[in-house]
Image 1 (cartoon, one colour):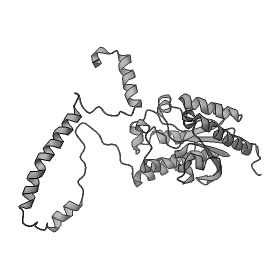
Image 2 (tube, helix red, strand yellow):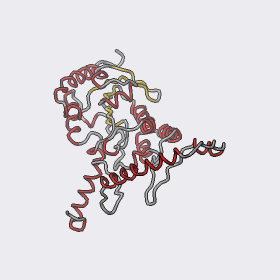
Image 3 (cartoon, one colour):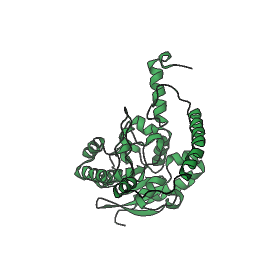
Image 4 (cartoon, one colour):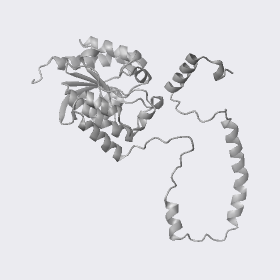
Length: 296
């Protein structure tokens, strides 16, 4: 087995990066522990203890009613205590949502909003992410492209839609005469969830004020929503992206109403190339609406 002292600093850094991208966040033990053997021992101990507990309970004639104070303490679950040497992340709650809303509404520009999001510390997702992803681009085309949450490539590069998915998005934009530079690109969630898991409902609620404020500040003419999570987030529906795609809907953010269409995420197209025909139909409809004068 290769030991840490046998590896070069570069090899150690690459190994740590691999574990980080795989979602590993904590190294809990200095020495390996055989969890399977430990579980088997615990199971055997429980099987031995169960007959003795049943015999003991059968010998008790009646249970004495607990006092009011004892009953009250039984109804209240014990608080989990953090283990020594570890720190519990902040718990998302209504106060964190209110704090996020205040920080978002206080920003008067995208630069101020980016600073506010980077300084925000009340969301669990930030504790494990390398980068904070916010709106990028000049928006001269009047288009805003919004995806779900950063993935490993985005988190490493500090840029939304990096890697293979980003290259495919570039080709999708080019097909309708646009480039990454003249659209505004962002994600619903500013931070990559550990192991690319889906954000929880509280985490999503905390991040909502930030993306809505980005839309309000950019004031795009049209929004292209990419992927199942982002479509459900904005449209408030529970259908799959195949049911939500290709339809124009009004998206409201901070008093700014904008026409939005959902289509498949580039990562979904890489996994299922046959769906590219559906995405192409959506892009043609999007381009057609873009070429129509705003008042029509």
